[in-house]
Length: 565
Image 1: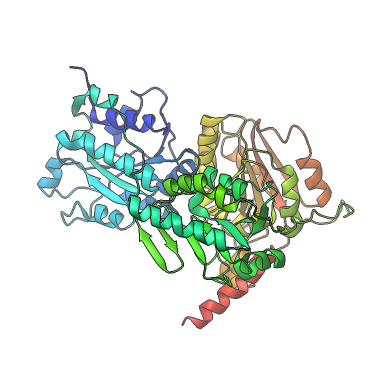
Image 2: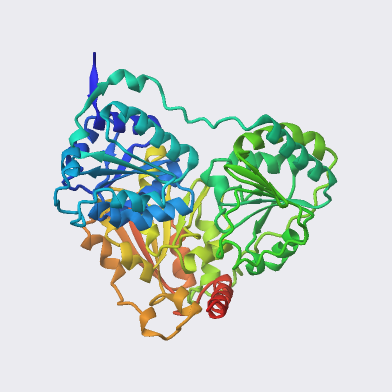
């Protein structure tokens, strides 16, 4: 009987679900497992600069490919990754965290090993991770290992949450039948309860029939749980005005004639705020109602007639239907709703964001509002646009995405520096899908300093992303919330144009832009528009210049913080 090792089995299974790059760092409790990666053609080991960056990279990869794998060593390695893992858990991103642990013999005898707390408790780190994992598995019986691995992969993929898998170092070489690989892991969703699903469908259809001014809002989980296509079809069939949230940006086609803009409560454009809040029915797909995603909870619907579609339940007004999953429900709704909306007279959608004044002087200094508006002209169909917490995450709301563009912004968890790692992961994923696909990062000079090392990994793998570094001399988002002149919001300035050669790049471009003319000349250059090399673009901006929505958010946040004491 043909056999393969447990480690080989793990990586073959990951490859079967489309995971072709493994993120993480080597450590003495996972080294033998890393050897098994090279037994599987088509799988590569990224080799990150540190575990936190690796977790961020796995997150970015999973947002594009549907799932990722992070591999760390016991204790010091796994704990370094947990901030990134927590972000993936919070934002519904499927990352499998595989940890190489001490051998079963060492654990059984309570040996005083390195990377432990010195108290003989080998399960403490597993218990920590359990709080930010959908499920966990610790392999203790090699005969059950295949089932445990398959369950972890399925849960990660289907639930779009983080999963923890611990494997003792003495089990990596355990031999199991190769034939176990012949049966694919079942990644399909279980069917909804027919009675509950029928009740929900009938209620939605009646609500649509009675509505005079219905709208659709697409949020984060429309992307995370892969119902973007169904949501777009719902817009096409109903012709209801459609909006997104900041976390939902990129989840529907912004070039569609029924797209109305971004709704962020009181921070929305007035015409968008009016259109959303005056609706008499809201179909909310994949809602994730965090403070920055809602303008500090400033949603103000006039109607209570809200239908929320979620991955594992439905909510209609105040009634919750547990276990009714939105993906199969939407597919059935798409078949039945055409008859209900027949004869519907589409209402007008808000006018698109007007383009910048073309007569502005080429020597005018760059400003955030102008830049984010103008960015719409640089972006291409299929681009992946990553925006860091800060001015970028708010500014991108003023940009119109082209068709099939993907937006990545960690609006809920909001870990500063996340996007450098996420850029690496997304660039790996994009290369696997289409090497011509552009991956573009916008990050502040302060955030960059937290995770800059991961640029070296991009260079090592000859990845070709764009890194737009917004140099506004410090943490502008923090200054807008509190302490505009406080020393703690300042940073040491870097020479950003020397970053790439310092980190080993040979074929690169590094350029600084400070005026409208310099921006236009660069972004309209045909060669610059091809992702032919890694690029750093330093964008010089005034210290307190920011998108208006961030200025307003800063005021709201400081007010909330002041009143919560």
